[in-house]
Image (cartoon, rainbow, N blue to C red; front, side, top):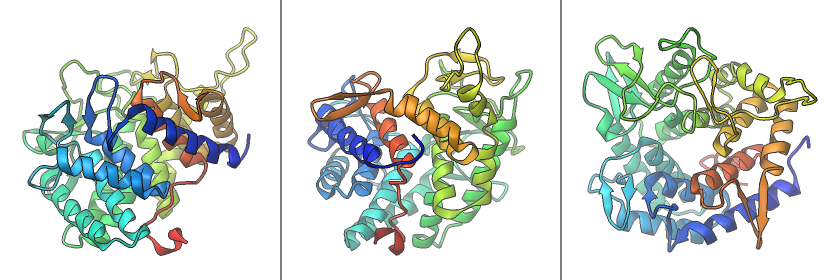
Length: 367
């Protein structure tokens, strides 16, 4: 496989059908534990607008408004029969705001643009922290106070911040793009106490408010400096920025993913010619912490390799996304059929490969 085509179109349509049939309940995307997160809702809204599915978008937005939205215009992050955690998750909020703005443009709905504009302002006011004059996107409203800010590099969405700069000129979203790349590059290089760094971004990192330095973040029960189920998304988000905006920093960051390229293409011996995939979780030094592949890990590695090594990207896509797909009753899923997160990232990875994620805020992308 060396290019996208009808296979990808069919996989996206079948994956979308499976997601709605298996997980959607009147606009809510419910995981196997009966939970609805703002993240899952944000992914549904993005998929809907990119798929030109106004009905899905309206259902998802109506449920989110009715069950998650707080008085300040941002959603609580977790619902299970009721809201059980009123804190916010900034990645979901940014994705929802972007989905609103693109939907307003795609479907000529000024009220959606205005709703997105208000949400953009609320994101800056509630989730952006300024340290020594530099704004940083924190992980949510719970993360903006204290001596160490909680940052999740996979939450950074520089392509969205450039759209936000147009609708919210009162705030310096360009500076937020700059700080996001500073954190991405520095966090990927940092060893955080290990002998060396494999050059992979961590799932989480702290920012010392006093010194401005990046430090390991202490979160209960979590090995935060690993490259795992969060961090892989960093490459997808940076890849989208490269495609939408041609930013040289995006290209440079993706070019530093040589470790993932080597994991996909290296010769193993004993009759096995290639590993063919990236493992799900790595320690700072590249030691494998969870050997089997994951769907989000495949999405991250694919995103990097499309810029760094296209033949390796095609190999990974054919083996993990096409070869790893299961087909049932007109639907497509990856891995555990009850894993909502895996299905979402199978869709996003396939859509990136198929060049099916246009910047719908721009008029030329909507033609």
